[in-house]
Length: 567
Ligand SMILES: Nc1ncnc2c1ncn2[C@@H]1O[C@H](COP(=O)(O)OP(=O)(O)O)[C@@H](O)[C@H]1O
Ligand SMILES: C=C(OP(=O)(O)O)C(=O)O
Ligand SMILES: [K+]
Ligand SMILES: [Mg+2]
Image 1 (tube, rainbow, N blue to C red):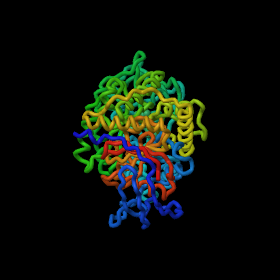
Image 2: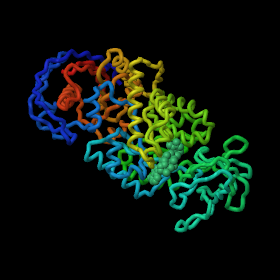
Image 3: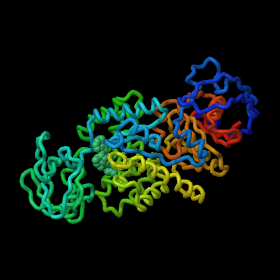
Image 4: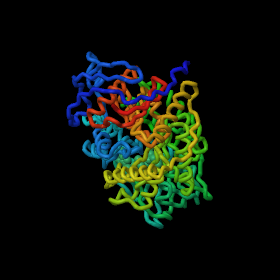
């Protein structure tokens, strides 16, 4: 391993002759090469590079001369300037309220970075339609919306309510929770709920408290008759299809044989096969208990998907996942603070501290983290959020989580676009406030690499981010094939946005989950000088940067930090 490559190149703005015609942003988002010669001299190398205005040597395939970025990011960069682009990423659960092509497009325009499909609901055909639509949206409109498939997991939950969208449980009513297999073509018997876990009737005891969705509705078990468990409603509320069920005895969560249920059920494995076949970008695993299940799944994916670039996200939503948090996160490619189920497994007042810890551990280990569930729950029904919800969103942004997620708000709520707008505007406002106040938190970022060369990359990114803050540069540029260097920069949470140039569309989509990264698809070479020339030309031609902007560039290929003004 040679360390001699490590050098700091300080560029003075090179003299450039640049033929520039006024160019309107092209509606198709890839930018065709134009044929103006450009001669650029670099003061450090005195080399003269001849290329066309896109930095492409004549004779290269036209694709090499284009850069891809989505229209929304492009507009944001132009209208608000680099500094005020949104750093916090947004995940939207797609459901009946948002599965149409136009609805998905509205979400993408509204800032959705990742579309989540929840395999708890709907059929595989339905999910396939959504995936196809998102793909079409990316293809036709130039977005890079990633797809996250979320497994059902084998925890206990209610059945489908025989097609009803909800059922109201009133105080004092007696409901039957049954493990019987009901004929799905017939309506369910009066006040009866089907339970998916066969051992349910054996595991519960008379006197247990039964919580639907972590306490949205509460029952007390009053009688067991074979497969039927009779329960008295003690806290009324709405029962939603497939709502999660937990039972509590003497104030603690009961973990009987259900704790032996596999994390990945046989149905989940079929869904995972489906996700691999469809080439989803992320698979989120529900109710992860240990690191082993993640390692197992990762090797399963690696053996089956051609380029094995599906990231595995561990959902932290059980007591066991908190106990084994460090190992689970280390084994995963990212994590989700799944506060819905987490709040049903630990006392609610412990959830905020758990969230903070999960976000911190992820940042330490350089894994993206999503804060999920009930961020804007009231917006399922109302067009404005509560003040408390805005405060909750702000707190997640302030913790610098990579991403925020909408669940019911976008899946089946009445105001999916408005909910997304709230996430977007609160993120922008809090990020700006934080930057204005220069509230850098003194986070010690431990080394995460095992090899010396990885440690060098980390030091480069840490230093580049620090320099970017001190010099108040306009943007960090990173040329990254795997996305790793980009994530190392993102981890530093610098003040300026990070333009991440990557050669493959799938890496570009995956980078869309990470804080502060603006992913571009660009073909680049081993020659940094020409990569920079090319990027400057392409970005300038689209009015995304201008002469004089100060930029710091790092790359996967050369261990260097370059500071320069855009010529
Ligand atoms: N694919 C789908 N088909 C029908 N309804 C869905 C779908 N995805 C989500 N939903 C609805 O949106 C709600 C919120 O979504 P989510 O939080 O992902 O699920 P859950 O609440 O079951 O954990 C669900 O309870 C369900 O009513
Ligand atoms: C995101 C969560 O998981 P799901 O919506 O699949 O229950 C959660 O429990 O918060
Ligand atoms: K799920
Ligand atoms: Mg959950």
